[in-house]
Length: 513
Image 1: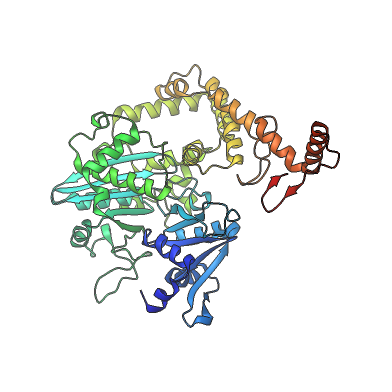
Image 2 (image 1 turned 30 degrees about the horizontal axis):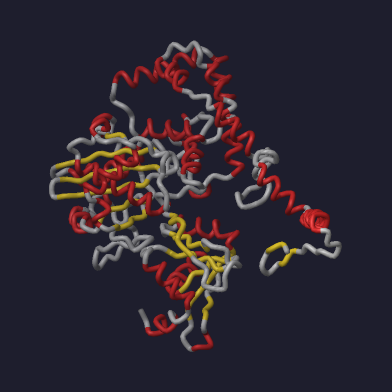
């Protein structure tokens, strides 16, 4: 740290900033100051350039200016989106106590870290594509891989041993195309030693330094895949086996991982545990919608590497037009959930005969029953993205309008069940039997949330009148405070017999006297 920065720490505010920044290395810290998020020092220089805003400074008059820039808090989501899309990790530091309640320094803490692989914001997610976080573990014997989509709760793990472990990991990463890869410090040497920049399997970035062969990345990571994924190095202990095994058991609420195919698969457990730890640390809460984990063997699917996917134009066409790809031509789905499932079926085709036949049976039944098919499509068109809504709800990121969208979607479920009632195909019958109509949840949302709620949860009007008696009383006070005080004054005059008694509101101490 420079002498200027050390001098600037003399202010309580900047001492607080440095303490918080120290605990969140590798992030751009959005530090809440009143109605703005401020960035300081190197974050300010970087942020001003990447967000294309003005760089200024504090303490210019003292001869040790502190670089800074800022954005209004209400427009911060757009700027954060711009940074995360470029591969940066953004730590949101908010004021966690009322700034008017005391003259001392307001308490602040990081409430969330937004990263490419853990984003939940709609503007950072593709409706028809999963947003995967990948976690890698390694040892001299092999490598473990975990794949997690925080927005939907999907959680997968596998492991590979032997000399071909690394190429197999690369193969899976190219298939899943994660937005972010995390790995422990100790894996750096294995990572760099096993990279072969001559192959398409793990091509270095186009902007790599030719003299050294060291590739550059969006966030100063040690390597950069041709899929242009953000890489994040974390502490080794977060990928420890005991730590990971305990985290997974707590997450799933089980005493043993035997029933999930993870018994004896230490590398897979280490990778999955590392992913869970990272999610808990970035979200500052437990993602309870992650309720299961599946161990998968790549041999259960037809492996289509990046070259094959590209040559066959499975997801992207050679002319760059998405609708000209196989997925673009086949995608007639009515929901984001269906589109993401179709996409997975195309890039990871099943080789299990029974599974393939079940899918074909369902397709055949719907193909021959056009009335049922059309009715189901109309019903599905009314459905919101329930997978991602459930994730937002458990993480406390949902808005009132999204809750109303959830209620409206729940109202469609009985109609879908009716449409599947006498299905013969195994998959369609399973859909009918597995659908919960969620009547209690629908009634709760309908009774608690206004029909036309505000966009943000901190705006008035979200809770329906009549749902909560105390809230109704407070609303009445807010709208008729003077008449309420006058009523108290009249009541107390009558009770005490003091005709000159006055009841007033003191704005400084906020008391009635």
